[in-house]
Image (cartoon, rainbow, N blue to C red; front, side, top):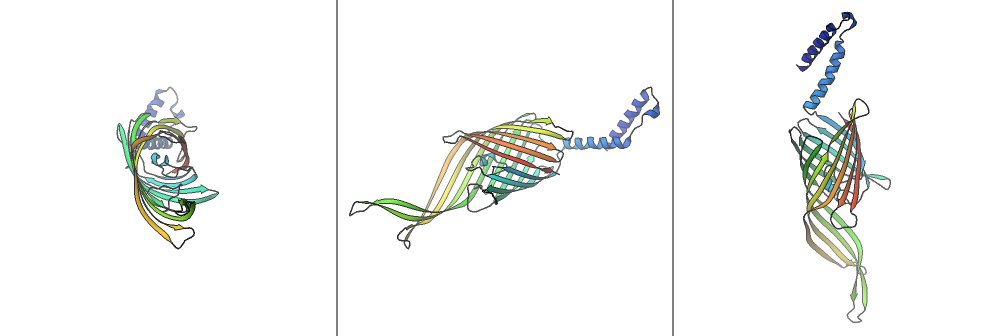
Length: 334
């Protein structure tokens, strides 16, 4: 209904404009096919501004973030910064619902290894006049044995609310993460004992085999301020989106460890002493770090290139105060 009306008004306007000039009427002709193409392009833009569209996302990322593609608080806990490759496929419906699948491939010592993979379901409400909000749930699948480069979490729930539709925006994220993993250790230990008769110190060596089942639960709260800047691109079908974000990361954690194992003396391997113990460690909520995330995206038609850099300053006591995470994603949206 909108296209015939625009086409009719455009032809009428062009006809009146031609007749108002003191030139021959045959010198100016109206190209209806060209007008229809221009109107189709205008309506595509009008529809995209009026309501979001459904699209399929295919991307490939490279960086040193192995824990999560959404929750910054999880990535800030990384103890190593190995190179990882993250292929992603996702579908986002115009209603706000979306689903994505990620692989985390670890590149170390010239080898590429599948570390873990994750499935995320999400919902984003972006139609609010002054605010938007969303929630996502990520389920991690991977190794039962924990390694430093993989995420110790099985489940991650992240919700956010954001205020402002202009360039300056503010909001907060609330996350809950939980997981269970197993650590197995075998090592040689020693202790010194004093012989009762000779009063001499003797070093005894023994083997320890330990298996620990670890249950971890984290709660994170991240207030942030973001500046959203859109710039014209180099050509007619591209543009840039820059989003620097300043945030404060607060969290509390609860860790429960069930440890079982055996101790065998080095000279008496046929004799062992078994042990079993459970202990927990809780930390009160506190703001732990200040982060600055620089997010830049270059859109060229259906293609995009998205480099991200995150700088983290640890507020609590520790030796390594500064850390940096980076990723570069590229792909297509259909």
